[in-house]
Amino acid sequence: MVATVGPALGPLVERLGGAGPRYTSYPTANLFDGRVGPAEHAAALARHGAAGGPASLYVHLPFCRSLCRYCACNVVITRRAGAAAEYLDHLEREADLVAAALGRPVPVTQLHLGGGTPTYLTPDELRRLGALLAARFDLAATEERSVEVDPRVTTPEHLAALAELGFDRVSFGVQDFDPAVQAAIHRLQTFEQTLELARVARAVGVRSLNVDLIHGLPHQRPETFGRTLEQVLALGPDRVALYAYAHVPWLRPAQASFDRRGYPLPSPTERLALFELAHTALTGAGYVHLGLDHFARPEDELALALARGALHRNFQGYTVRRADAVVGLGCSAISDVGGLYAQAARDLSTWREALAGGRLSTDKGWALSDEDEARRGAILAIMTGGALPEGFLAARPDVRARLAPFEADGLVRLGADRPGGLEVTPLGRRFLRNVAMAFDAHLTPGARHARTV
Picture 1 (tube, helix red, strand yellow):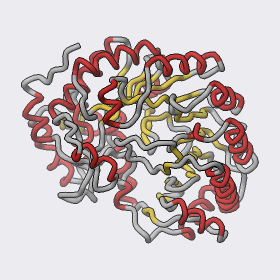
Picture 2 (cartoon, helix red, strand yellow; picture 1 turned 90 degrees about the vertical axis):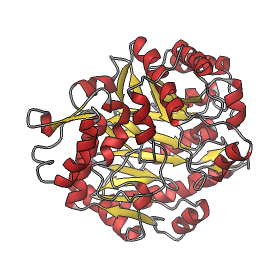
Picture 3 (tube, one colour; picture 1 turned 90 degrees about the horizontal axis):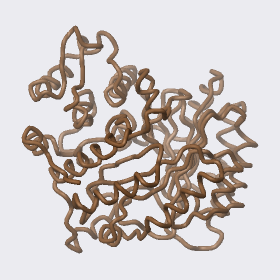
């Protein structure tokens, strides 16, 4: 496989390949502040409970046995016996507080376990987690149960326990199969062990297997990444997430080791070439590019949702929207409920202390204004291939003015003959984050984000 960036893209990459948000939320999480605390969070949960609607439930399980140097997630590195059991004790207290604030057993339409490494928990601890959630939330109507797994630590017994609990969508963390890349990121994982675990997952009833990759890592080259893509296709996943590496050493000190050790990071042009290589390989194999960094088989529900204009995006990435609220449990988990973002304490000890004191650990968040809601809807449309609300651009000349250079570059088309007055071109789909930034009223020049390409 050969990765190239055409002559039309090169100058765009150099000009637009700066920093920008991923827009899994709007306003973005770096703006959350202390004006949202436990009382505001509980009130938002009560509003949702009184309204009577369902919710998506996210549970953050932060533990990992070793640190992957690229990781920007909120993780706790430990091998201490009993750490997960103690965490479940506090998670049970948190679930009690959230359930009490909701005021009723809320129907959960989506359940997602993330981390960290959820399969850091033993199979019996996973069963305990399933039982404590079922005792406090209505899981009878759950349409999707998904979990992130690390194939290096996940056993057939883990997969059997997850299948027993109804989890039928599993995301395998891979990132890259090349040994040099794996050594640099401190994550050694063979294709063979991943393939065997995929076989076991299918055997126990996993209906959807997803693979997570990252482009922009140290030592990645077209020829080696091409081999990784061939191996990923051999796994036969239903979905592939191709995340852009977010180099944020000021937030994640472990990433600074790449600079200290002299590991070469691909340039913006090289990063886009790697993405183009993957785009060609995946679409050539029949996958649909959903937008930004996700691909799915054409029969997958995400691809079908894209076709009918019903694709959604939240903190877990692209999804089918099954509820208007996301309720988060666990340290650092973010709830999106009742017009409020509310984030639990990121620090494990702070989270535990609050719950031991009988209160939610919420230490920051954001209350959305009507204008925030409108712009969130517009950014969501940009990221999911939807149409802008009628009259949105006419009422916001600032947005239209920021879109004008993108029209000149061929990234968008503006005009009354376009749905909502805007169409993102195929070229513009490569720069979705840049286009979305035109709608962001809170974006601060010079703010530190990951690169857009």
